[in-house]
Image 1 (cartoon, helix red, strand yellow):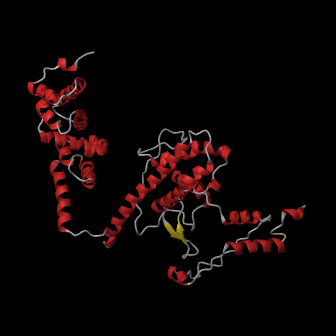
Image 2 (cartoon, rainbow, N blue to C red):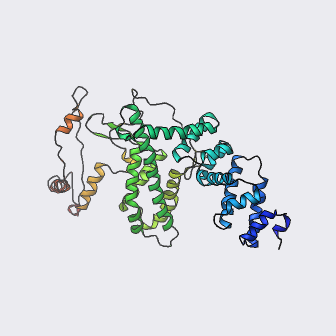
Image 3 (cartoon, rainbow, N blue to C red):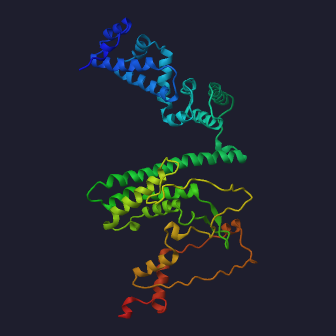
Length: 408
């Protein structure tokens, strides 16, 4: 077995440190390897700065408590302040490491940035991305500005700020927090499914109980984040979400979440595993991917579509979306009125034929405003009334509803 310490001429101060703190021989070997790295680092890149902080953190775990700075000073020639700064860079900025390395932010700037708050760090990264570089004075200005603003201005609830700027602020909050919540719920569903898949027997009822309410919530969150609202073309008082583009991938995500929202719409037990493996997990992985262009499950092409918006939709422009009045039942996976009525009729041994009444509205007719529509209480038909109508229709209109027993 080789002795690493034999290969190094230990300074007397370092040897004294090891003896005074009773550092074991194997620990001393690891510390000496770290020391050689720390000493050899001269002109540091962004990547090496993070490695330096990582090595110091590792050395802190090997040394007796609160002795790291003394060891780094005596063995490596570092100052205590430099040690604290490098450790802070690793601890506070490692979640931003990839983007900081990509932007080639210098070691001195990293040291200054390591004392910033997350919001200030993100603001600094934005400046670096926009200008192609980040300077110490930029970080200092961000931190000083935030401090001065906090001291000079009382805290204002963003929901009390008026005008376009106020609206933009609360929209930004909605997008930021709403997106986190939506992705978190998709991850929760995917975790439950991934835990169930390795089991020999997947209990459909148990898995559905764990995921169906979260799926319903995620479906509404996606609707809130990504879909517009529009009044019906013939009845302005009917306002609903516009559907996502037909056959688009996000429309499939929405349809999957709607389907998972009720155990009754899940596949039978024989098809359950294949559905979870080939559809549910891959689609949820696609929706939660952090990649800039994740591959769609089963896509034949190697290139995934990127998020390019060809035109900017202005306030005075029409929204380029299908505004038929309600989400497309085919896209959303929602049964139509006819399908629901047929299902209810089948429960009573009857078949129902529904003839949709033609709209009496013309282009010349006055469509009531939203205020006028809301001023008139609407009549809500209850389920017993619907069932009563179907029973009545099955007994009086044999052409429309014929019980199967009558044919026999």
